[in-house]
Amino acid sequence: MNYLDLLAADIQREADPASRPPDEDLALYRLYAVLLLAKGVEVTDEDVHNAWSAWASEHDPESPKIAPFKELSLGTQRKDGPYTKAIRNVAARLNMKA
Image 1: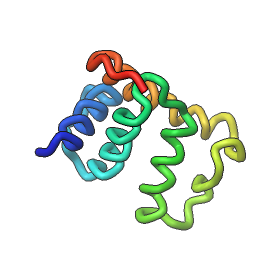
Image 2: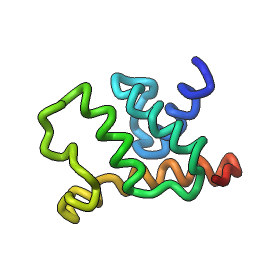
Image 3: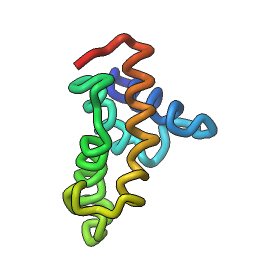
């Protein structure tokens, strides 16, 4: 495993303690690892959504959720929160700032 995969697995475990990373969503969590490296504890739900949108563009290109964050319903926006929190928690543990 490379450094991005290690960070991705750490984020995945933080978001879902019952998961057994790396799993089939490793590519998505790699994008979250890039967010961690770029933004650290300052990552936002919008950042997470944008990363998810990039991933979803290959996996479910017709998804209506591939839209600018501000255009999504509040309920859909809130789905990004656990991943934002996981990235922030890993960043804080690793003492990573933006």
